Each structure stands twice: as C-alpha cells, then as structure tokens.
Length: 159
Image (cartoon, rainbow, N blue to C red; front, side):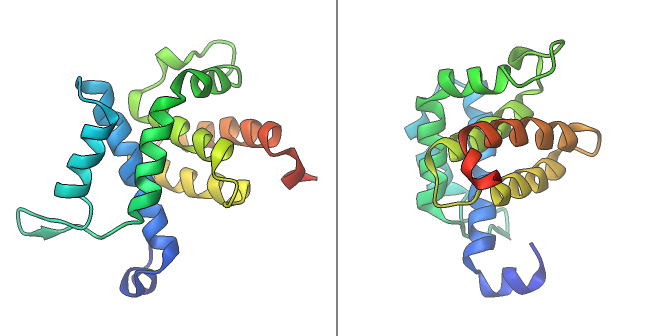
C-alpha cells in the first residue's frame, strides 16, 4: 500500500489488508484447535483496526476478511483439491509451507465465490501478499498456481 492509499483508507487498501489478515488467520487456525469463528472474532476484537503494544493496526474490510476466513475453512477440501491438481507433479499441498498454502486457499476461495473481483486483480493482490512473507521463488509459484486455477474457474475473463 502506498502512502496515498493509506491516508485515504480507500477500498483497495482496506481489501488488501483484509486479504493479508485472512491469510494470517488461516495460518493461525492450522496451529491451534480453535474454530474459524473463534479466530475471526479474535482478529476483529484484538487485531484488525486495534492498538496493540502502542502500535495502531490499520482497519480493513471486515466483511471481506470474515467471508474469506469462514468460507475458505468451510470449503477447504474442495479448495485443496483445486490447488493440489495444479501443483507440479513433485509437489503436494501437504509439502507446501503452511503460510503459502493458506494464501493459495484464500485466493482460490475468492476465485470460486467472490466473482465481484476480477481474477487478474486477485492474482496481482495475492502475489503482492506473497511478497510480504517470501523473498524467494514462492511469489512465482503463487502466480503460476493461481493463473491455472483462475483460467479454469473464470475462463470467460481470459478470452
């Protein structure tokens, strides 16, 4: 996010932050036994737009965050199959780094259900988010996998 979008708090920056928070919440759910609803509630009460240890967290598109987390978890089996089928033959979803898998899950959910967002925009957003976590080849992997999924699920957007 650039200074201008942060200052304005425009929809784009709020949506980007919602996606980043969703990836973090999905990651957290992989490491504890709490439900998606419990994790969403924790994020909304204590992280999203909150102050923590003197740091003010930016507000995000809370309904988008909640939608991504709850429904990605609900559709995880379907989503993991879509991701796994598009990985190179030597990779499986259980061999991906957890944060990378969570990112791919969130993006895949959006391809399936958030048709209000163009696929190319989602790909760009999630590649950007991947760069928040990774400095190696992972963003290229994100690009390749999401491109394949998007072209299948939203073929009409690529004609």
